[in-house]
Image (cartoon, rainbow, N blue to C red; front, side, top):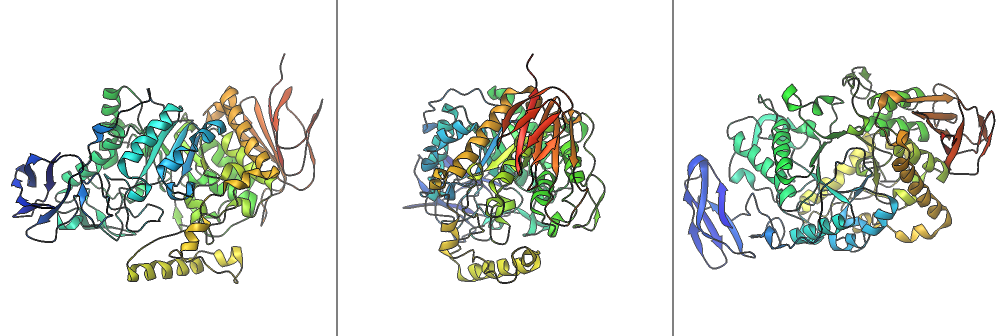
Length: 587
């Protein structure tokens, strides 16, 4: 590798090695370049105008953490073992995991040891939460500061290459969660190199990443190149782009449209599909529209309204952003169109929000879930639905997600009803920053309606406390309990049905409907019977505590049931808090 860095305002840039300091040569566009190659494993830093030696903004390896020296990483040293043609991730079953808490070891190598379990479950795509380096050992990963590198406690860049190789060998695609909308508070030295941020826009984290101000072309290039590198050097199959609504860009061509076109070109060159999945709060399918039509060209986007509709209906929670959800009518709306707020008034936001999903849009372009890192981890106690719901209702939630017309995502441990929480945890070494994060979490608990959910006599977990992180590590011994093992098998059955029954595999929103027998709305958990119509298939869910008889609208056979079921000529008897899947009767 030949050291180079963009520092357009510098009058001098030095390459600082362990035993040498030498000036870089200035070039066009504010770039500075070394004249000699650095071999794999070489440690180096960069100094601008005689200032402190800092890590490379494009560092591929930070073995000593975000404040330490960068190290040259030769990605071509990995001898790829698996033959892999790629996978179109739309409509596939995703499994989101956090490397640090997926196993007691908290490494990519340890995660490899459990890939066969995901294959047995029926997972198609493993989605890794962010792996970019951040200060400290433990954290969610959304405060990373080195977009091109891999957190060393997880195993560093070589471990990620090996993880992807092992996943592909098992037929699993890999999606990587990346954060381009901000950088973490510790180890962010970018401003010392150039105008990576702008006061023209502001975000929840401060000044926005510079996408449309002076110098933006190179900042955009810095982001796009980091994304393309995951596809080439690490062979990942898709990227999940965090909170794209915070990518503030008023330029004629949005960064995401640029990235989408570049990824499409790379996909054609590599001969395998590559995906971009946007996490967006905008409820607007402009993100999915082709770039030729002024859209962003994303492969898919997260649709949180589906989660909210299921969660509020089953749990009865109505605080915060759940305020407009909870009725079967809202569930019907999102099952047929992904968004509840499709231009209508959002009480939580205090304004009209979103836009309708255009007719004919493939439901597989929306990623939905009953659990994910946000919806669990951002709860006051990080408690999962399994902490509050009986297993029968967990089975109902699973069926509504996995047999929906969307792309389903599972959160690690969900498949057996894990009782371990997944809490907000940090490991900031800086005393002031650690105290601010702890105080902020306490204030957030009081301001987001959690007292209403938990009661006032609850202690908020301190993000900095080691036990907060330790409590969030999965406990696989839970799977040995009969009830948990049965739930795990139910998830396998549902995934199998999604794969084998065309109507359940379809993303046709027009062939999806929801009917119900029960109140239109209640102030608390809903307790009637839902029927999700998927073409000729039916998913009958009894959320109540009494058995119910449900009339059938045609000859149907039981394909699966979470509890014993009886089918008669005029209907099906569905046990309390259970779900039955019915498909077209055999001839």
